[in-house]
Length: 328
Image (tube, rainbow, N blue to C red):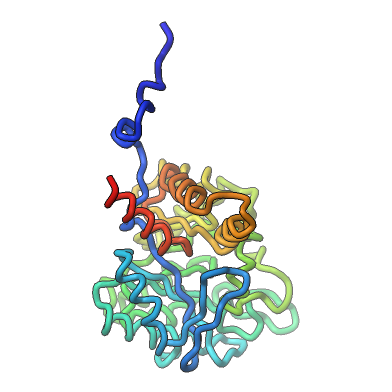
């Protein structure tokens, strides 16, 4: 007997009835770039529709987030001053700290995630301290600075601390520091499996964070390694991560699927800048339907096992999802 699987595809109503995965607005987190200064709204040329905002103009984007129903934002800072130790990262008066306080005061319903990494704050652009002469990125010497940054952001009101630096032991160092300073209620979303990817190039334009020399292959993961990603995730969970992440998303859905099968922790993916910009460029050229391809990509991430999707498409996706719901 022929198996008639097409019976379950005969109409829109039938397809909705048997749909296995659905992207919800509540799954989405929107990344925002905050730049030190006043009255600034700088377009990011390599990321159409994305801007750097000074804190006094951040409300322009936050109003859109509030109206969209997206539950939270992920903040990245662009300081006016950079030095070899990334001191602006753990300055209580820093640009992200200021933005966090503003959001918690004016938009208390929003979940605030704060990225923890030194690359946007160091003069050399690396994610940790650099040994003079050798250029080696120092692991253990960097951990106290990451912990100090995390405590500063938590003190400003950040709900979730998101270390993206890929130093060994950083989750444990941050968890201990948060607990010691009375922030045991703050969650850690670890960038656990973060690969040394070419998909990050537009982000480095947006965040002014490209390395001044060399690359990040000694601390970010080799794109060829899947089993190593599992070990990285296991290590972060042992150290106290509350949520785990795979970054980038599209080229690493096999890693996402494996992580979803092995671990019970909430699993995030970062739909990164290069993935976003490729879609935007192709859509602008008329090569594809932007809405369809974005929703297909996000659905693939959800199907692979992601429960949290950090995406520059989030505002558009939320609007499309809402309109679909109103028309259903």
